Length: 406
Image 1 (cartoon, rainbow, N blue to C red):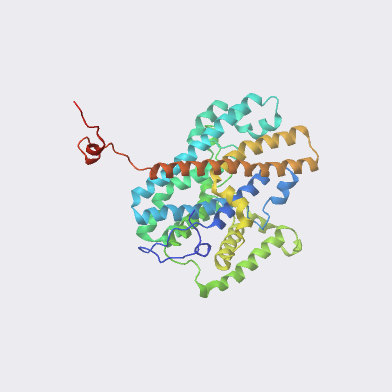
Image 2 (cartoon, rainbow, N blue to C red; image 1 turned 90 degrees about the horizontal axis):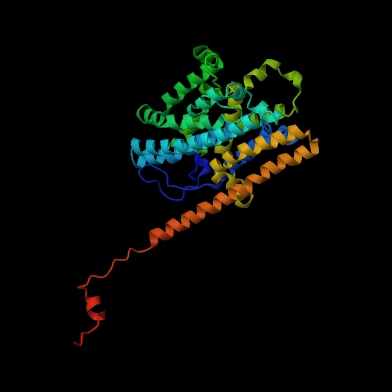
């Protein structure tokens, strides 16, 4: 997978046509895999989830996953845009968004139907799909339109919508520049902070069983557009030049401050309680966004180089992110039902949470094996020479043809 942030990419050759050479950085796979691992731990209500909820400040795995996915999209499809054209880039993006769409719908509908059948016997399952069970037929009709999103099933629709809209975003950036695009995106984010989006949308759930999901689309698009811009720009130039690496110092200070306040190491009397309203996750509040920006700047300027052996487990998850994410959804729903139905002790709950995270690794290993076997098969097929039957009039036939003794 291509590197996202310039300082996360080792350039070993000169750029061609203004585009940096294609490389694969294990660190990006490891980061995305780490976000998936944290996400799985958080989604099961155990002592593990309480420990892993926003572990490094006022930022969670969802922000990291969406932002990094946008960066990677900016690089992978931005390269196609530069080397081919807008149509080639758009076709690739829409093909990927269709793939994610079918994974989402193919997971949600069967799981929702199972919840419908077992709701009377499994109250935790009924609670999780409570909105669906109130209007099951209407909800089933809205699921393919991405207009009914039960809890935990609202991240992929966000990804699908953003990815499907990205060709036009990148086309506008090519014509007008990323400055204008990011500024317009910031205005939409500001509108979400002022709740203008809610006033415009009203309450459509009064008419149909709409369920938009917890994430505010207007707010989170800013995180996606910012990542998309960084990824595409990193193809052509450095994002943080050597003489500006000092920005890591204030970024690190913000990161440490957020970490201390998140875990209560900072006196609560020093803070106004209203400030926590500025850290809202679902509308991507200003302080939460600032914390995410501090982490991004810190990584770009610091450019850490962890040992590859240390990153190998989570990079395995990152290379198979879609299959791992899809697998974790039924897994955490099942684990949540078990934890709540059996009223397990904290110790047993902890082991359940650890087991859920551990199961992601063999699942990713199976997909990795399948991908490598498919790649070897395709490589062997491509390398196999096309054998043409010799012509009857060729010299080879003349030499090897039996002599008639009639």
